Length: 117
Image 1: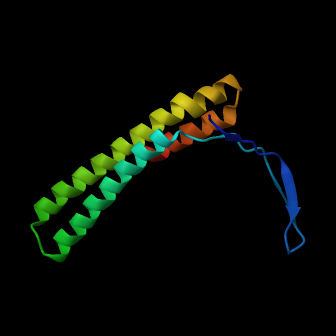
Image 2: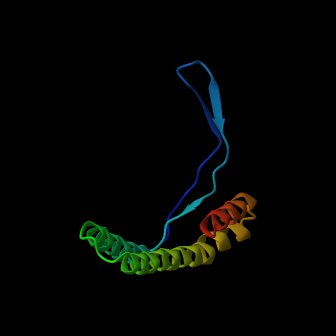
């Protein structure tokens, strides 16, 4: 079963005496263990690959081979991002559309802009 955590508008006073108000934050969707595991496995592989590249550099291996391996890691990270994006659209954004949560949709647009830079 999926769990959501709702947030609400609230304010608090800082030690400098100024009050700060926080707006509504979107509901947070919690993904299934299977989805998390798939993303974490991909990240673990990319991290392992980066560690191997570090060793290549430490061992003065051929720069062209290092660049090829860096391209492979970049591709792995991009593909992981695609998986996260698809999961987000299939769960979080569908819920946001159903709830007319324009803020969540705008946040997705901002995230996509940063991801594809």
